[in-house]
Image (cartoon, rainbow, N blue to C red):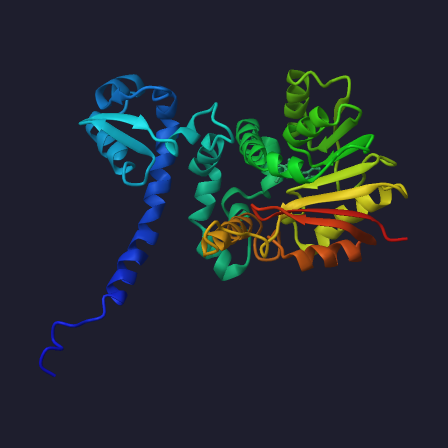
Length: 355
Ligand SMILES: C[S@@+](CC[C@H](N)C(=O)[O-])C[C@H]1O[C@@H](n2cnc3c(N)ncnc32)[C@H](O)[C@@H]1O
């Protein structure tokens, strides 16, 4: 019909462009990791610098570096204050090692083995097997025990992520009244140290694999908590110290399938005295809220579940709903006493013995 020729629906083109950006976004992620590997955030700490000065300092190729830095401007990571002079934006400043909840160790982690694992996601999709196991011939935690440098980066990344969660945890959960707190799979001790600082009458024991326990001992000493806190090597499938008041399982159950998650809960249940509590801290897939109530709130659990899928395969670790956690706890002979879902989508689920 006359006049209709110029009318067409822009939506399919917009979607096609949006899809390309989704596909190209791995280049942005890679570029941020390169920025970190070249230690550019440290160079831009509190000041702007020219590409030439950054290239001289890092040994990078000046023209290539300039293009890489400029490409990160529209993504809000860097600002180009004058031609060829770059500074960190507030978003970019999260890559500094001293930033609150620094994203630096996560960028380092993704630049190495974990990022390589993601290139094999098709293998996982086709076979259901762990891409990590396929590439490195070992499960993640056994591999980390053999690779102390990677272990340290992994633990730092966990600790930095936790530091973003602790404020909301402490604003809604009280640890007063728990005399002896066991952090099961406590990593480098970031959470347990933070808890003990807020609970001066409590003592703590951290249980983890050998490589991590030595890092936890370092943190406990740095935080001057050795008189109230110990780190011990242990296997949470076998046993944890018995008869204590609170057993923390922070970001543990999502690493395991239901059968193994149940084994861990049963180990804790066997150690739990009548008055004791188990506290599970984990993301719940139906708990995330974004500021605008939109898709943003669902993207974090979606990405985290893909991360688990790539590491542990289809029948391994996974993110769970609140109901799935309730079922696991009930199957382990535990009864929920309190469930708090925090604004970030993290749930803090407290449980006691069911008998
Ligand atoms: C995802 S990290 C969580 C660390 C910390 N709880 C947190 O909230 O960040 C899982 C932890 O479980 C530990 N882990 C894995 N297998 C274990 C086992 N069989 N016994 C004890 N700890 C184990 C790992 O070494 C790692 O520190």
